[in-house]
Image (cartoon, rainbow, N blue to C red; front, side, top):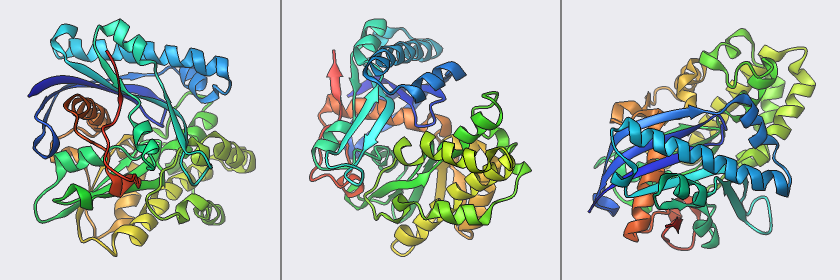
Length: 373
């Protein structure tokens, strides 16, 4: 069966809505995905602050609907960009915006919460919406994250080799895919852009939302003692399956770092944040992946690919393992995660389980998402 599916995502970087329109044929191991259009709709600095500061029931309630409006507008824009009408599209898959992610390592009641009201998206577009993809995996005993290994396996596996697919959104995550889905390993490596983005906003009084082109970190030097302190973060010692969020690497950590070093050594602090992401990622590979897999290469996606300092240092740290962007495999890196949610919506309608228990730790494979007709 062929479907036209929209995928929507506002990631842990909290900087934009990414929207894609895909043609998807089939399901499961035979699925084929063609990207037809991609748009990125940046959040204003004020809206980003609203997302990051929502901490009571009223603020979260209002934010849920405000995000739904943002996602609905992005869906209509990407459909229009493809030269199509809403009635031409079969379904929207919306990941929403994660505002809390609490795996078993953080709480006795594992849970996860994504906002972006699907009823608002459905009303604005006239289309069915599949949303809330993490929760069924959590209910089945899994971490609910990462979700992208299913896409990585479906689109990028190659007979006879193992490939690492590394994403740097707010959090870093990796999938290693081979021929069989059940052999896939995936987990959060630690910080991606989250610490850097928070520091960039403070350093520039919100003029920059990230370390644009590495312009801030290039001006500093790594603080070795602080780097080693950061690398002692308890999350980094956890074995897979593991997943992280703002609870470990978000505003609280950024505020502590800024209070200690921001006013006296802001650029050194930014350089150290880049080194933290690089070293946490490399140590995760050395501990959990390289002893087990012979990797063809590392294919990187996410906003981190647009930071040349991060990419240069990651390539040097993982050498001689090749580090490339996922674009060389035929999918623009900026669109990859949104494509995942178009695919997951298709699999929901097909009744195909799309979690990966070897990655999340779930007891079994389950169909992900909830349908808002």
